[in-house]
Length: 273
Ligand SMILES: NC(=O)c1ccc[n+]([C@@H]2O[C@H](COP(=O)([O-])OP(=O)(O)OC[C@H]3O[C@@H](n4cnc5c(N)ncnc54)[C@H](OP(=O)(O)O)[C@@H]3O)[C@@H](O)[C@H]2O)c1
Image 1 (cartoon, rainbow, N blue to C red):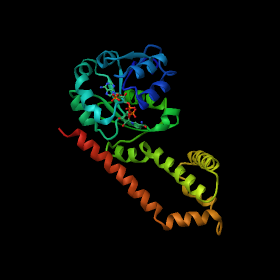
Image 2 (tube, rainbow, N blue to C red):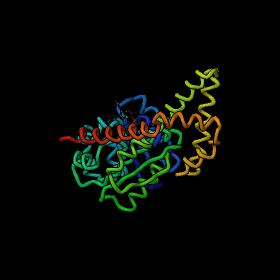
Image 3 (tube, rainbow, N blue to C red):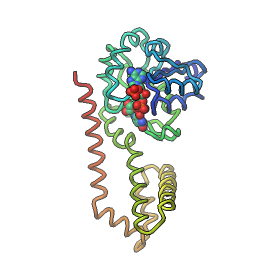
Image 4 (tube, rainbow, N blue to C red):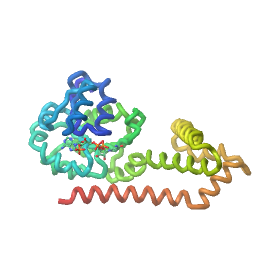
């Protein structure tokens, strides 16, 4: 990875998070980013990266090209850089939600090695998780390179079916928002129960962080951890019973399905010729 030239198009939230994580991993001068906004290019420059206003100049030097623009901007971007991408033929890594590799490939002129990655917001603090999928042009060495890039800001998991990217987007891509909502709800409910707002917000946030750490050490054992803190006849049991009786599990199933459907629809809509 040290000797790989990495170019990031789009220096927004995700592009800058990736750039910040990669700075320590990539040799100086081998990490570049482009963005139309002078203020964002300034940030890239302050991070010590090579900065470009012109995407073609960035592509010309990239072994690995990260596409970190909004899904709606991807088609126009791909069309504009297709000639330089065809000349350079880098590994293309797209973090855009929903947009399918076949469409990206078509917009870039065809025959490209493409990895789709779905990171999430905690990548901003190097605590993200990413799900990756590769098309069949991607070599083992290129998979390793894509893993190393995303591992700079997140734990990396691969899936072998592109269709699973929609569900991964629904679970981990959008997931931090569900947990923020839970903290929001816990805070509001605690305030209703009489706690001062600041104290309650701190209790809810710290509880979420502590519980997250515990379950992170035991993936797949969330139910067991919950049962351990749910004494028969106790307070936790009463709250959990309320949530389950009111359809908490079913509500979550519907919510994840809605996000999954939205990701699929976005892919179909943006990929339509
Ligand atoms: N943020 C997350 O937590 C998250 C999580 C998972 C995946 N993602 C994916 O990451 C991608 C980027 O999201 P984001 O939140 O980082 O968006 P963002 O903050 O809007 O950043 C995208 C940047 O790319 C710029 N851009 C647009 N078109 C460009 C072009 N042709 N050439 C160069 N730069 C261009 C944008 O400028 P303008 O503002 O002028 O368009 C903007 O500065 C999305 O596809 C999203 O699905 C994000």
